[in-house]
Amino acid sequence: KQEVTQIPAALSVPEGENLVLNCSFTDSAIYNLQWFRQDPGKGLTSLLLIQSSQREQTSGRLNASLDKSSGRSTLYIAASQPGDSATYLCAVRDNNAGNMLTFGGGTRLMVKP
Amino acid sequence: KAGVTQTPRYLIKTRGQQVTLSCSPISGHRSVSWYQQTPGQGLQFLFEYFSETQRNKGNFPGRFSGRQFSNSRSEMNVSTLELGDSALYLCASSLNGGLGEKLFFGSGTQLSVL
Image (cartoon, rainbow over all chains, first blue to last red; front, side, top):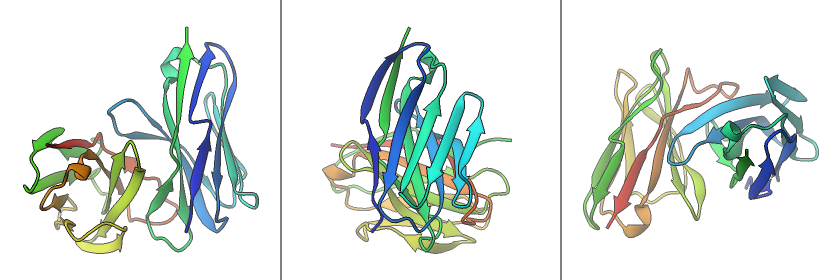
């Protein structure tokens, strides 16, 4: 059974810092991995989707990498801003699990002005 | 293009009652999935519907059920509510439910069971 873990569970940084969020998964037979952002009491906003054949994806100040063989992904946020404060979730889609995503527990990020 | 719409935004029910939640996917999207989010268990998959058929189901009791209509709108129903059903229920849609597609989530329905 796929398990997804995110470390750290919470992170507080001063504005302007570059930071890395980690995601690990136990079964490397994944089709893709998606990073989401969630603001308190709200739904999920998709940030980046990495297919299993890709190594990384970039969008603005965000860069996500994937190392399928070692079961890891990282989300790099450059020059963090207070508006980046949110919970970041990674989710994997397994090869044989249809459209079901398995989520990690999330990293709660606070960027202080 | 409108996003995924979930109604109602908030619900308060008492134990033993039943509840129906609604989800309208992005126009043109035919796959709808439902997830439950709680502080203790995080996000867990409930089920997925495509072309009015349940295509995949998570590990939840039979009190949780759903359906999809011909216009791709979906409802989920929880019968005999328990305190532990209090959660944020999120709906997600994608074009055809293909493995390579992004999922787009709604803002959720916050259910409180008293």
